[in-house]
Each structure stands twice: as C-alpha cells, then as structure tokens.
Length: 218
Image 1 (cartoon, rainbow, N blue to C red):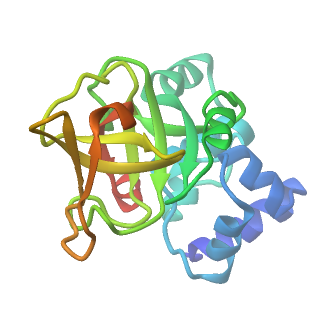
Image 2: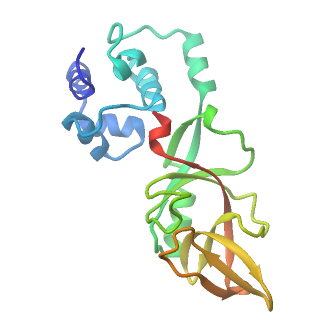
Image 3: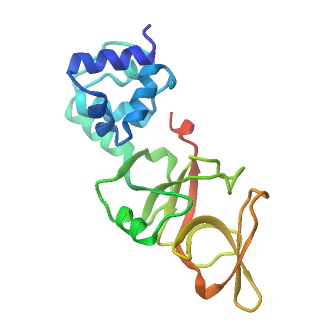
C-alpha cells in the first residue's frame, strides 16, 4: 500500500493539479499539502477526504487508507449524503494581538470557510471557527486547537471562556465579575497573569462552545 504522501503525489499527477489547487479545494494553506507530500503528515482527515471525493470523484477510502480504486463514480445520492455530513463554518484566525479592523474584515469575509463534520457539533446559533495562536488557555485549549464560537452567546457568565476585545486586541479568556464593576480576564495557564479591568472596557465577541484538536478531525 502506498503511503499518503505517494497517494497525494499520484493524485495530483493523474489530475494535473498543483499543490495550490489541492489546498484551494481543502481551504487550507499550501504548506499543509507540502507536509503531506514530504511525509511529515501521515493522515488526512475525514472532512478533507470528503471534499476531494466531491470535487474530483476520489475514493475517500483510497485517499485516507489506500483501500479500493482511486476514483469512484459519484451518484446524486452520494452528493446529497456528503452535503448532509458536513457543515461550512466561517473561519478566521485570531493572532494573540490583532487590530480590531483586521478582525472585522476577516469575520465578514465569506470566502474563508472551514469544513467540519456535523458529528462534532450539536450547538445551534451563529457559529464560526477560529484558531488562537498561543498557549495561555493550556491545558484546556492547546496551541492551534480549533475553537468553535457562538456570537449569539454574549451574555456575561462567570467562568466561561469567551472571545473578548480589550484595548483593540482579542483574547480567548475566562471572565469573572468582580466587585466595583471590575472584571478579571483569566488564563488557564498559570504562567500568564490575570488582567483586571473595568467592565466598561470589555467587549464580549462570542462564547467558546467547543475546542477541537485538529487530530480529532482525522
């Protein structure tokens, strides 16, 4: 059985595709495809395999595990099943510090989506996905974990993790109400200090409702 890196190279050669073509289909950076073809990444997720199947009629069992024929004939029922199994969420990145205008631009850019299997979600509402760069919420949320956030949930709840804006920067923090209209922004990683601010300085953007390690999407 060919390893994934060889299957991906074979697939691109057969279809005359570049690494950029594949990354555009998957909605990821081209570096992800380079990692696959170098052997640094040895698995491909369920969601990515389904996208390749839908776009190029690839046998998803072949691209994931090397089983069966390379190509398959998709029926109308197949396409309907694929659509029902996946959900597109608006996707944006929140660097540890980011200007508010950049955040708003990314949040409203409907060209940026990530595909998530519906089995990972049971939350209703205005959902988006983001990645926060940093380990301030470790071990609850680790660096590069995928956060699913609900911007319908902006009511202050002590101890919950929210995406908040403070001084034109965005953070994923637990929030706690204190006396005299003060708020504590708290990290789960004890190496980071608490931030004590006036409640009027805080803008709650969305509540974090799920944290998904990308390995769990495989």
